[in-house]
Length: 357
Image 1 (cartoon, rainbow, N blue to C red):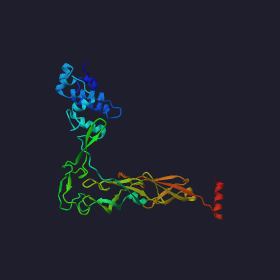
Image 2 (image 1 turned 135 degrees about the horizontal axis):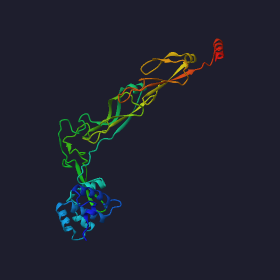
Image 3 (image 1 turned 60 degrees about the horizontal axis):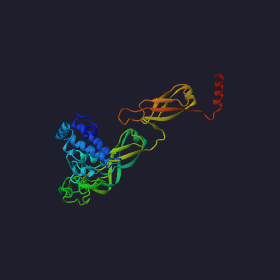
Image 4 (image 1 turned 135 degrees about the vertical axis):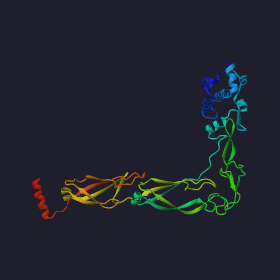
């Protein structure tokens, strides 16, 4: 009895070519023999179904007669390798998607170009003052290590020298490799180690960097610290990290900010917290007292009867927001100081006051 290829792929008889292709790709991932839990017999059956239903002529014959020429005899896994529509020696196939399927299953494939390498990311720490973190500043970093060659600008070619086609990859930027799996040998592509994927090499190498595109040494880099940055946050400087192999992009530089604490102000989000000591009489009678802010002193009215620990809010005297949307507030905590020593007159007046309570 002929197999129901529609049932094998789990699609309806009116399925489109794209529906059949999606079903095949899903099942091929699941049952490929070289994967853990794979099933060679099931995979062969799925491939037979796909070869028939993806070919308009074969599908028409199958729909009319329930069979095709490919169903006249049995097929084992070795037969499938030889005649299943995919030549594992050349990487060619009869249904267009097998190379990509192998790339997705095993991480490589005959049709995939590998991405070009890039340089490594670099992280450095920079300490700044508290007020610099609030209002921003410019700093100059001293960086040591590999840097892009200033003579050839990373090309690796001597000034005025032309770039020529790479002889290793013939200008394609990739070289082919063969990886032997349990069942088959699969061809894959890797970035060319000579040109690093560019397809070109310098006709004459730069004398300063010897064709590598980078040199080791010291360099200075000016950066801008944005207003409102907090301790532990990082600034990303694109393409300022370690250079990649010749002709490839550098990595990124991450500057982690460390903010030195301030003896007067404590930051909580976009708020600044401070404490202000007032006398017993100022708290009891009320007063106008100066308050230090990061913008300079301001006057604050203290109402009569203010208790120790009471909080006052100074609008827009806090931390500038990184998005530029205004500033936070400053929170001032009042600390009422009780005198530890009293003169005779002060004691007499307080005793009279206590008699009125």
